[in-house]
Length: 333
Image (cartoon, rainbow, N blue to C red; front, top):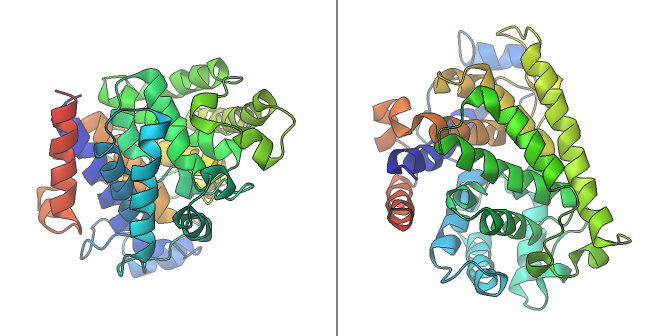
């Protein structure tokens, strides 16, 4: 994978997170525009990020310290990094309750399937999955994306949305046209509908309370397909520049809506990442997670050079973003 695209994904996600963080809990679009005239935030301010970037970096560190992409080798690096994040003094950025609860349970040891929050499909499952999009093998990419989500979010839709997020990054970085992306993701969803990755997930379906592995995973893919169809309809409609993307594909607090609305913000202006981030910030939903995902998609498509050069020195965790970008580029050389 092109090093410029790898940097684009990681830095783009952090840029979106920082730009939209001030509007995360503001549902009043008029108030957002009044606070950031004329039409919402267009700068990363002091570059301060949220738990979205912190957890993305945790997944990146875990992946870089995984000797081979197997479930057995992947578990402890992720457990270690999630526990470290749990106790990080900087973990003060409104972290999600599901992640906090599951990470406490993971820290106590035992089977990870007993630690996950069974019915949660919050966007914490896929706002951190970006590094999995750099994994070249399709099965390993899908397995790892689902696994890192499943450690905290047990609902099947969280797993499917995480895999689709990683797949979108892989396809865009590989040169797929943004216009072709929705159809490619819908085809992927339909092809994977009954694929339960038992080697990665074990008996998660039973622990969560489903009647069988196929009924479990198909529930997740069906919910993702529904929101991707809404995305397709939104892209075919005439969406005004001041419209709220959340009105079309959801507010993004749950995983499949975060995927679809983050994609919508990106796909409306695929060659203008700043406009994509602004759209995500001026929403009634989970703006920082939406912009984090939109920034990752824009970075995968355009590379890090598409963002303002001065942001590089302003963004929090710039040093680690640089180091991880270089390390993943070396792996993919």
